[in-house]
Amino acid sequence: MGNIVLLDELTINKIAAGEVIERPANVVKELVENSIDAGSKNIVVEIKNGGKTFIRVSDNGKGIELDDMHIAIERHATSKIRQIEDLEKTYTMGFRGEALASIVAISKLTIVSKTAKMSAGIKLVAEAGDILSQEEIGSQVGTTMTVENLFFNTPVRYKFLKQDATEFRYIKELVQKIALSNLDVSIKLINDGKNVFQSSGNGNIKDIVYVLYGKEVKDNLIEVDYKEGDVRVTGVVGNTLMAKDTRKNQILFLNRRNIKNQMLTNSADQAFKGGTGIGKYGFFILNLEMPADYYDVNVHPTKMEVRFKDEQSLYKIMYHAIKGALLNKEFLGNNEIENNKENYIENEFEFLTNHYNTDNKIMNQTSKLKKIELINRDTVRNVNYKYSGILFRTYITIEVDNELFLVDQHAAHERVLYEQIKENYKNNIKNNSQLMLVPEVVNLTHKEMEFVQNNIGLFQNYGFDIELFGDNSVKINGIPDIEYKIKIDSKNIFMDILDEMITKERATIKDIEERFIATVACKAAVKANMDLGEDEVHKLLDRLLKLKNPYTCPHGRPTTVKIGYMENGKIKNSNIKGDVK
Image 1 (cartoon, rainbow, N blue to C red):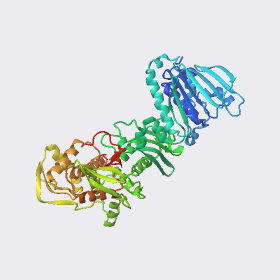
Image 2: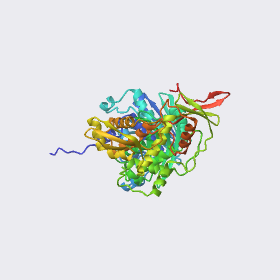
Image 3: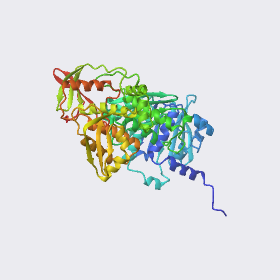
Image 4: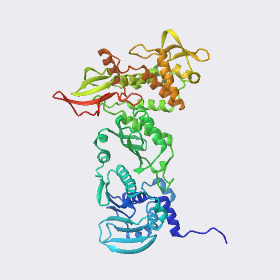
């Protein structure tokens, strides 16, 4: 007699439940998504004991037909697809028909449902895969599903559940994410008889953000609405102040389904680059809308993992959507949106995704000039400011329309130099070195010398006129020809940049190039405690106002901060917390 046998239906369903239902939050997810697929506009989720003993999801959707009640709890029973080809044109949250069968296999499930055509509702009770009863009952149009005693017949799985508070936290986070992606659906969450969360369903994402994160976050969000071809990206991103040390505030949806995708996350990181600070991650809540045949969510039962047919195009679209929104921010009280920012964004994307070999890149002078102009706006921002002075020999204070701003002189100059150096490099502008009267020889350690030898072209392309001088020395004939406030010590700036690069030398060529530019700009920019004359202040501000991206230094430090508005000689509505340092 052979060893291979056919499993009974209950065992099959329990195995499927292990894939679909790991904890109470999975039950809530499946039931709420079914409610959304049924066209519900009001959903109430009630939980007791972290969902272990009681979960109820009520909706005002279209309901379940009488003839479908029995088959609804069967495995692979679904109204959403008929054949495999339908997966490429379905937009529903569920489609496999495994959820209810998996739930009823490990719990007691009560379904009360009524359609608009039915004279009375139907109540069906099932447990461990078996139907216990069915009867007519008075009810409103819609469906209520109650799950009790989850995992009662799988004690080993029950033992691995967390404490009630922890399991409820998973449910709360799940419901809130569903609310963020279904803005036109009102969702209420009740835990042990107490209202915990409720969305209005008015279609405004900032209202939900206000409830979840508070007023400060809501006031620092920028709306995103970008479309390219059949793909549209909508939602919100946070400005520089919203960057955090973790990715917990990065939420991504695909056709309103919460997903995780490393490619899209990497694209977002590149778009936020230079605006979030080192080691911090940008805030975003974004939904990507696209045809169903552009992707495959049928990778894992949780449907969190997604495969895309054209990842390269989506990487670029995600970058453009976020970068474009970040460039629409207010600057020194001015809200003028740059009409021609797409060329600048494309130029930035090209720089971040392509390695520039200046020996092979040849451009005529006309194309160079056209490229350089991309860093500046078509029309300079019209900001009528009143210069007041410099605070702590670091912050330029200006008044704009009765509001007071601080301009960080180092961060502002660093951004100006960064854009200039980068364009010089990208456009292969030669002879951009400032020759020294007397060349300087610098002795290096073995490690420093090895880095210079391997990257001497990088130094030269950015304007350092250097040459190898013996086994452990280099001769500096010139440094990048960019404006300096004071005389820069050529040896110091060279060594500062070299030290910075060596500390993070294990990086891709693109990361090295980008960080090199940022480091050169940082070391060459005016510093705190350097005195600027009034003419120099106006020149710096004028150059900053011309840039398409004046908001932060390349390391993410804001160039300007609004203190508040002046009223009766006092500052009101300040957004700075603590002391200015």
